[in-house]
Length: 190
Image (tube, rainbow, N blue to C red; front, side, top):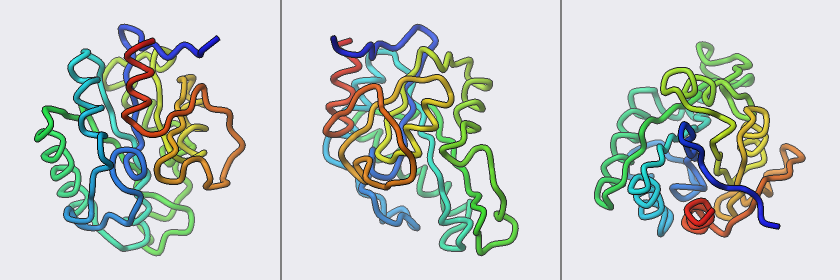
């Protein structure tokens, strides 16, 4: 029996960014962000189905001094522009700039928003009236999947990016997919 991947009426799809939407690389400038083939079209399919899409991304590069929050805002504006070329959009983008071992003092802390923490998902729940149990988180890292599990959402591990090989947590995703396009196909046919 295949797992239930349907999205409830108040649900949403949460997407990790690097390794799910765009290539898993250091993205410190807008031009560093390269979409994974088919990812924008997959988001457009969710948009057309009336399913809300939120990006939830750890951005430790800020904590390590590789980029600023203003630079990240430019990167996310660029991402929305790339998505718009495919009639797609994210309904919101949440990020966590903190790390316990940060080089930038202002960002050195253990933060409940940094995945596998659930803070970003809870903020979206509260600000956008999202039912986490009716939602799905799609990620490429075990920390993404663990965050989704802890928030009470179902999860899909994609084989792009880390493909679950980051070795940071023991997890059992609700389902697995080759990439975001395949994950969205499973969600929309559920």
